[in-house]
Image 1 (cartoon, helix red, strand yellow):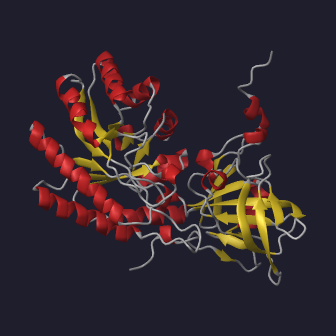
Image 2 (tube, rainbow, N blue to C red; image 1 turned 60 degrees about the horizontal axis):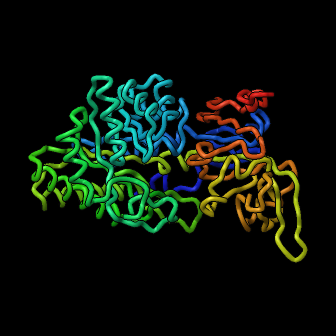
Image 3 (cartoon, rainbow, N blue to C red; image 1 turned 90 degrees about the horizontal axis):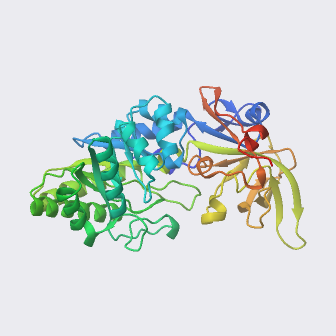
Length: 438
């Protein structure tokens, strides 16, 4: 069984070229820094498409599967267009994500709207754009959704999001399937929600169940357990209410390899587990195999992306760490300060023959915790060197901010020795355009 992209640390085809510089997809990272400036997000199109194809191939034997890209990982118009052409729909969680897909000229019928506190305006936008499914999270949303649908004289197909009571071994902030969670209906609340839909909220059409158990998952058993709960509940609801619900959305969450210590399963392994779990549980509960929705995000785009920075100041603490500072940090990648996330990196320009030093990579922002990488060995880093940090495709740009009024970086797409801007670098004029002076 070959590795899948989510098990790689670097994008496909990452290498040192004849000059000794690091390149991705034939694009010299040092030259990209000169052309576009730093900090800079770089996404490798070949890697992105390869992992998308791996997902499609891994589930190809399942009769009815819908691949939904989890947009929160990284959503731009260009990324949406690429993945849509690869056969993906979209899991969207905000009006901004909905509008980005719409603006990319993609029919929203291929999308599912998720989230624990959708606003009235967002729900109206989703309905107006013809959203395929709304994953309803709570009783308040059921009432609000039906009210909006009545006003518009429309109907909407939905899934009920449930909390299956499964905890995966990941950071507590990215666990979503445990009982004590802000997301979804508790199992004990499902019947009340179904009763309301059948007897009161006539504009809502229930199609199935949705659950999500977390993110950066390395275990396979949790998917098996989740599917068992979903199919058991599907069978119970169908029998009790004489329904024919036939859709389950199992979320995403497959992990990727940030460092050599990470060992996520391959896409093929996860697909095998999921399909076997469905087959065994459908046989156990005597129910037909349902339509399967799966929502990968990080494992689709994480490895395809890198961040590049220019090294500036250094500080040697007496009898302590040596710090090197880069021209970005927590505002363009908040994961280290939020989750203690770890990354690998290397100097992109030619440093052949340079000795290696253990350093800590610090950001430029006014927080002591603004550290991107602790205690990494790099080839004698100096001011002006270009640093490439791997596996930043997911949750870097999408969680970026203007902290300290620093501009958000640009993003480029690379493929076959060509590079194209897909997010322009923010300008100071854009930074202050919403300021109102007195």
